[in-house]
Image 1 (cartoon, rainbow, N blue to C red):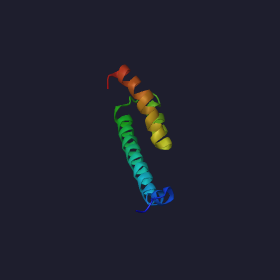
Image 2 (image 1 turned 135 degrees about the horizontal axis):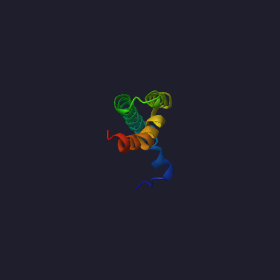
Image 3 (image 1 turned 30 degrees about the vertical axis):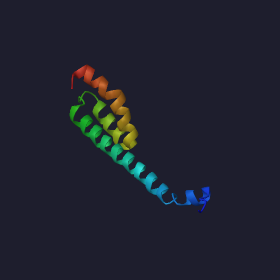
Image 4 (image 1 turned 90 degrees about the vertical axis):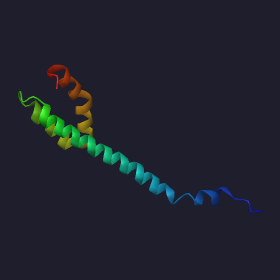
Length: 86
């Protein structure tokens, strides 16, 4: 009966680490892209055209990518819905 050492055991799982990390990163990037597109469309279609608010938010979302979309989702969108109902 052969004794399986820790080094031999861990060596068999090394090829799976990059695949798992790449898969997690890929899922995160796809979700970030979907949220970015959703917030960009939401801002362009529902944000009121008073002043430069719409232009500023579209630029924030486009230039800051998923971070800008997340800020819009968490900060401006609930405020807009309370104010304008859409």
